Structure formats: structure tokens, C-alpha cells
Image (cartoon, rainbow, N blue to C red):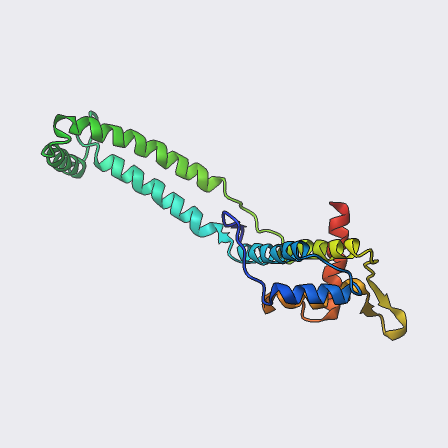
Length: 227
């Protein structure tokens, strides 16, 4: 089912402390001295990545929204019709009875008085306009299902970019490869860094193993290079 993104952005505190991140970054870069401001920025980036992941999980399904918009449009049109009993043209007994009763009670309100008929007519015009907009809004929602799998890991591109930035600042080559001497086992600095820094993410976000982690990193490197 197609979905739409929740509005706004959010941050979520990483699973570990910022002081621990500084220690891990120093270990990964063989003692490179990251100042507190840089570490704080990396920590905020991780918080933002987690927030983006949460927003992606919380995307609203379009079908209930579409149904609600159509229901609103129908209800507004029904209300407009029932309140049109005092207008010229062919009207049912129910429309006449309802509109007359509402009109008489509104006229008793001293803040409305003789303006009751004008107010109802204005409401009916506005109701028709809003009903039309509701139907347009429903038609404007995504129709086809979004591609599965890839979009769920879009946040990993930002995570990989963070690791690559760490490597650049420490002047380390962010290697990522398969060791042919050990059954094509995933290896490289980027893999080690991802394994360590992923511990700051919620468990649901972490890669299930090095093979999956390698594939995520490889896809993200291609995506970032294309971008």
C-alpha cells in the first residue's frame, strides 16, 4: 500500500553516550584527535538518522486518508443539501423540515438574527468548495505501491556518509572488500567502523551480520557516488 511521509523532522537520542562515540572514533582512526565539537556534530547526525528512520516507519498509509477525504466530501455535500430546503427548486420534505428548523433556531440567536438565511447560504457555498477540494486532495495521493526494500534503508546512506567523513578527516582509506583467502569474508575499515558505530543505533536498525552490513555499505557507496 502506498504511503506518505509524516510531516516535520525528529531527533532521537542514540543508544550510547557521546563520550563513548569519541572513544570509538579515536580507536577506529588510530588515535586521531577529534575535538568535542566534531564529536557532538557526529552525535547529532546519528540522532537525526534515527529520527529519519522513525519517520519512515511512521509514514501514513494513503488508503485511510483517501477514504476519510471522500467521506468528508460526501458529508459536506449531504449537509449542504439538507440545509437547502429554503432555496428555490425541487426540495424533499426532509430537506425543507431540516433547513426550516435550523433556520428558525439560528434566527433566535441575537448574534445572528435576520442574517440566518445569509449565513446558511454562505455555508452551503463553502461546503461545496471544500467538498470539491477534499476530492481533489484524495485524487492527488500516491496511487501505486512504492518500491519495497530499498527505501526502507535510505537512512543508511546518511550513516555511511558519516563514516566516510570520519575517514576523510582522519586521512584513512575507507576500504571495503571481500577476502578471497577466507571464503570471500567481508573486510575493511568501513565495515569495522560500521560495526562499531551501529551500536549507537536502536537494535532494529542494526545490520543482522557482517554480510548484510557489507551489502548495505556497498549499496550506499554507489548511491552516494551517484549523488
